[in-house]
Structure formats: structure tokens, C-alpha cells
Length: 118
Image (cartoon, rainbow, N blue to C red):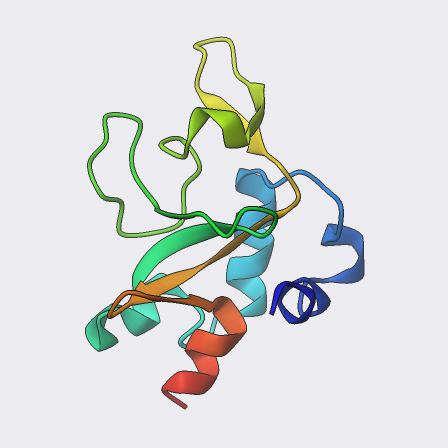
């Protein structure tokens, strides 16, 4: 499954750190689908990330630990961080992390979430 998730990333996104800019680009790509948080929340999808090398899944959270309603990287596990801003907050995460969603305990990539409710 890891290869299929990466295959659905734009070519220039593969092996690039994940940043806020990367997430905004993905939002544009999935704008009119259920691969976007605001379009799939009514289907009980929660924004999350999966580390493709370890299989670890983490819900998107604000820096203070509260669950976020959209994909943000501030509250992800420290060991996923590859860069921090001047305030010490995560500003980039490893390229092996994929944005997606959790529903009923199962992780879905953005494309899988879009297909699940289309």
C-alpha cells in the first residue's frame, strides 16, 4: 500500500519534505473530492498522517495536543520532524509521511478517502 500512496503524489512531491506548502498543494489537488477534510468530515473521517516506513498513524493535532480539523504538522511525533521554525515548532516532516484520514480505526490516503465516498 505504501507504493500506491506515493504513486498518487505529484512527481515533484515524492521524496520531498512535507510542509504547509505541500499540504496546501494537496488540498488544491483534492479540492472537489472527499480527499479534503472539509468535504469528508460528515463521513466521520479524521485528518491523519501515516509514516510509511513504520506504519505508525497519528491524528492531525495542534501544537497544544488538541485534535485539528484539518491537516497540520505542528502536533506530529517529534521523531517525524526534519525541520523546526524559530519557535521550535515542526515546520517540515519526513517525505515518507503521507497525509490521509482515519475512519473507524482504518487509515485512508486522500485518494482512498475520495474513492470511499464517491
